[in-house]
Length: 231
Length: 222
Image (cartoon, rainbow over all chains, first blue to last red; front, side):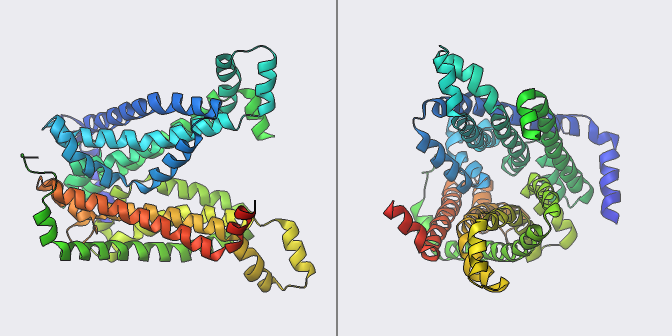
């Protein structure tokens, strides 16, 4: 098929691998936005979820946010943010902020829900035993609950990361760069090589992120838990 | 933007007709995707239940498909299928399958084996057992899948606006409003599409109450 040839030709053209509009700088843009929004979301959602899971208070908040999250389409969220972010900054509010804020909104709930669920599911007997041994609440959380909940916590961060990487592509329809830009330009210029090149790059990045997080999770989970899961 | 009010009500009232058309298109695109996706998923789930070894394969494939952004899938299909209903529907259907199959499989898995034994003991044939026992007991999780899939599809329909003016349902207004720096359009498209998703979600909750009256009674009775 001609598509494959056109895509391969576009991807292998050295001119597309340099400059401010080249693949490396677009990739960096994509990763920077995804990383920053994931970090900001985790800074809020992780401690909040851990605390709710440990104390058992406000757990309705987690359930509600998990449900509402599915009903919020990112395309609409990015669009809806534009009128408000442009008030803050006419330029960045029209190109960067809507996608950035929407990605934080997208990443928060999976991290929050899994942090809460992971801690809440820790065997109550273990927590009691730790308390009876004289561990303080903070020590119980850090020394007992978090290590046991780690696989669940990691799953939340992984699914947030993969979704942000994939969805940040939408930003290209709203003035943001990133890898989605090639898809938008290829579509506008009817350049199938560029369009499919963009699709291949985005899909590869999303799948690579998924694979990296899976490998990282293997490394992080304590040996005892991994053995239990395997057995 | 440009010192304009957030919502220009005169524009809104002058465009009620086209807005209603877009709502119709939105529901049309979503309804096709959810019903076709549901039918395909039911078959895939039935196969996965019979042939357990295939199931991990199905889930891995589904996870990978879900990882590919909708935006990329829509754009890529234009080059293959041209601009037709299929261009919008193929990705939408694919994403519903990812959400449906695990829910349907879990639904039938959730039927306790002693209930199945009891049904067999009462002399039900295979078909009767499936229709009168397994299906009703699987309904809550199947409907949970319908809720998820319809809400996510209604959201994804907006993305198909990148295909051109003749697609996107309410997403058309989001994109057009952005290009024209016209907040009224963005708000109309964005808020109405979220509204549709919420209404669909509530509709399926109601459907579940109607289909499984015993579940509600059990909760009320404690």
